[in-house]
Image 1 (tube, rainbow, N blue to C red):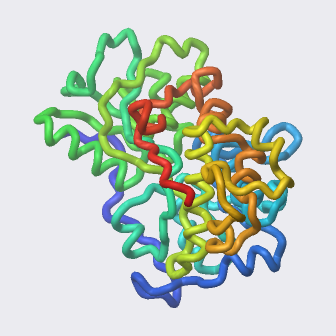
Image 2 (spheres, one colour):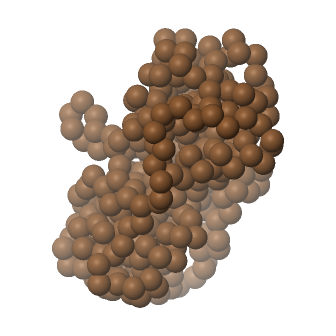
Length: 343
């Protein structure tokens, strides 16, 4: 295999000061958030704007941003009680350990290494992504298995590079590698024809295609080099807070499953209604168990809509990113999202 550019040896490992692997890094986050009256949410505006970005007025918007607002609505009864903090993936563990943020919604991928060694817990996967290939349609390639001998633009990141190498080695194919520090440089090189294909997460590729003059001149190939499940992350050792974050996510999924749209949820907020999944009952035992006010699920959905509404608003076919639901559909529609019972 021929390499063009500079390789980075080794893998950077984030270490949480004062906490050994598996040791509790924080506790009592729910109480701290309620006393503060504000949720501090880590987001990353440097990857795909559809997940987190500031609009022309400076307000935060995006898929990940809405998750933060849903959590604030459930816990604090106010979807606007959020402070957004810019945190990239590598800085995430330290930001949680130092209590600069309460939750990460910054595209951190749930991996065994991060789960076991980085002081993180992952309550829920919000978006199933994966490393794929982008090629010019004129190349006539329909499958990544046709890329033998291709020049591939890839980010100068150990994981992305090792996954790329493994894919070509597994399929007994040769390739040349061009390394780039940032997505802007990578896609500029691809657009200039310096490589035959670009590889990155499918969401990044879709966003890049949306920004060019002739998006239909490019195609994202169907194969995935590796899976990249984007997950909400919290500090390890605080199961009560992890439960709250997990069940807010499940509420958004279950709302779609039950046909509870944002407009309908807004009509019952403040009425003291139990969660929509409970057709009868005397109160909200789930809320009591989680330590938050009754009606939490309605408030979350009223603030941002159900999961399908979030996806269509920020990532769906009608947006610039233009992604189909695919694995991010509900289980009943052939996807991977399976809401657990809210009871």
